[in-house]
Amino acid sequence: MVQSRRAWFSVVAALAGGFWHPVHGRQGGLDQFGGATPDCAPNRDLTPALPADGTFRAGSPERTSLAEAGAPGQRFVLSGTVSGVTCGRIKGATVDAWQPDPSGRYDMTGYRYRGHVVTDAEGKYRIVTVVPGAPAGRAKHIGLRVTVPGKLEFSTEAFFPDDPQNTRDARFKPELLIKKTVDGGTFDISLNL
Image (cartoon, rainbow, N blue to C red; front, side):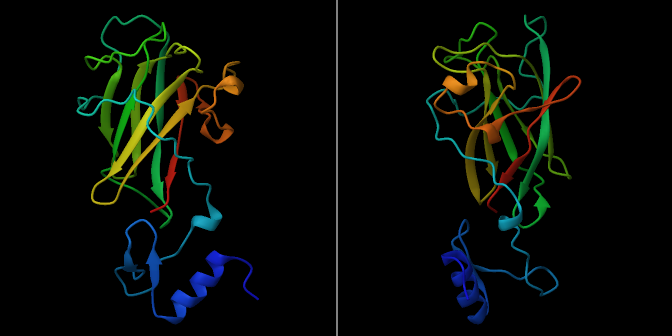
């Protein structure tokens, strides 16, 4: 017996000889060898999306360091991977990052503490910055927008662990916590692709 609507649609689509891809909006499902591509969504936690909050600015420079030379604050390295539910890491995705300065203020006229990187062949990204301050009424966080060419634009935020403001921030979700490392933290992004 079919337990959910998704499972029911999967059965119907399989009987029809393909499946409907919810992101691409087209029929698909065969890999390069003619076999069915796996659907890993039920086995993987997708990164929660957060709608844009007005602090994003398009056109940031491509750079691996958001902090300018001599910028005040504690150095922080954010790294991670961008993956899709087709069980693969995504090469060539643009990861835009932006944050407030250490005092909690965003640069809304220039590109201080803003930039983007492109994921490598293994879907990895790495951004050097400093720990941001908390903007008014918010917890410390780094805004992230992932663009996969021809497929998707996805926005979310990465929150700092142990920040007492997290529970008071309406946009905070435990799934959006950065995992601590020696020189910063990791934040893997899993997309419905």
